[in-house]
Image (cartoon, rainbow, N blue to C red; front, side, top):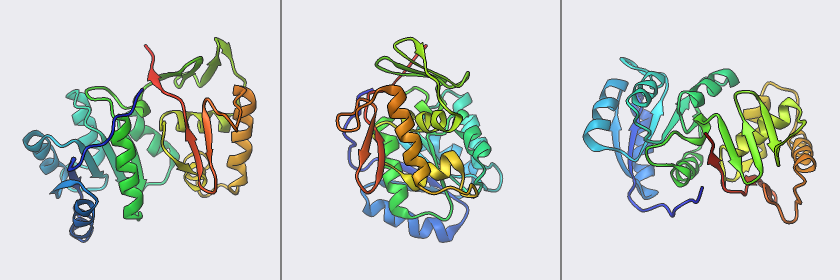
Length: 243
């Protein structure tokens, strides 16, 4: 999957029932180069999607009339694959996994840093596939000789099944569904282990080392996992959906 440069003034639909958030966030997004329309609930969001044809939705989950998850489900049932980032106060890994499987492109826990949201928005737009489900909602992915079957929780390299611990598989799964995106160690801790899990960032490095051994991936010249010194990791290969 080759990423295209992001154009200016991308049309964004920002949906949140909290005026304190939209009144501050919408101008910030405008200053960051986006063209922003605001909706206050899920029903208005669906109307605006039809009227303005946004290129990305930033969608709160907990809203009156229709919540964000229901808006997501309705759009995907209509075969509308406009990229969607969910804003959620629900931190459970199972809830987040369900949202991604239903077709969300990414999620961000409240409260959040607006600069982090902008980084996520740009990353989602770079990897968006017009008219197609996001990689996060695709069951089988490939990067050259590496194949990941997310439904069966199995990975293969050159058609040989790899032996991975559950945490290493989850780590690889997250990286491969966010290709060419810098992912910090703290974010990987949140996604793979959860903040209530008593581990530190060294646990991430340990599992990355495990992945590299199994994938025969050279850290100095990586095919798959690139280290960004002092920041985190990036999946370096081109990723495609399979089947």
